Length: 148
Image 1: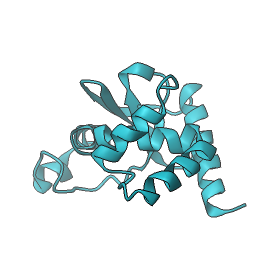
Image 2: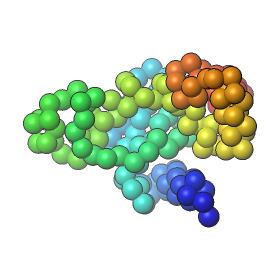
Image 3: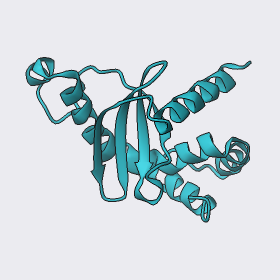
Image 4: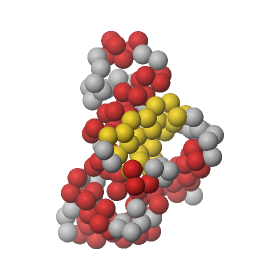
């Protein structure tokens, strides 16, 4: 099994565990159309992205590292004193403010439609589109019309 297939399999298992209620939510934050939940998963602590259009359809956004970053709207000193759930909340806010609106549709296509994703991605690269940019994300949204 390739590393990409193994990652997709593990992410699928994380999504199923979350949907079955096995993986508890440490924190969540919503702003407008987009949201983020940090979940204590079966393999790792996961970051899931959400759209208000599909609130029960998580998109794996990666592993939560759980350490201070300058994107968080809290000082390092205060961050170090927070509980795990409070740290997760600050990271959810940072994810929604900085990443989710620009990456949601790109990651949704990659996770839920991997075959189409690879074809669309190659088409977009041929015309020199940064596939994970805000503009690229809007193109992903158009490609997914009727599916999201």
